[in-house]
Length: 278
Image (cartoon, rainbow, N blue to C red; front, side, top):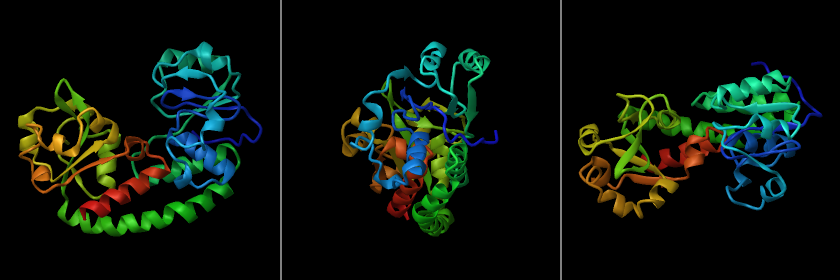
């Protein structure tokens, strides 16, 4: 929907494990980073995942739960005048109950692309009447990275490497990304091809299906790898060790939120990966 300027509103942002009141803050999801960036002109790159930067914003705010299992009572107790979230907010009946209370809900469209990230920044900035700051941050931080990424993209896309994204293990099997999810968009951002694009969503993959997919590159989130051990231990998994990625040491672990959040830092994560595999 079209954003309306909210220069003096109490803004509640909904994201993963949301913590919010009096203006902002969730558990460091992309929308919160964008909001803080355009409010304070703070570099997106300086907003560290566990840094003191967020401590002052989160220490006194109550938790209102996971974004797909929200409580209308918990949210409305914070007396927000506007709620910003993405299209995975839920459950639907809770969102409807909040709407009936006449609290404005703005859904920021999720588009797993560079254009989608820039639109997200501009949308949040417009809501709080900070378009000028958003343009400055985009020009200063994001456009240089985008230019670099486009340069590496052209080189990588010529080879179109098959990339497998593993979120972690589920029952001993790799939980992998099919088409239509954020990981699929991330793979496309760097010029690769999703090796598991024959299904939608996330699902455990068999050894046979991974070997048949023959990925040239394997990505895994740092959190997913922590449940396995090391890259060497992952390489020794029966579904992984005979893949081209394992044989050529093209297995990389990276910050999951940076890759999949599709906020400003996702562009830097894509550039980081592109430079590793080009």
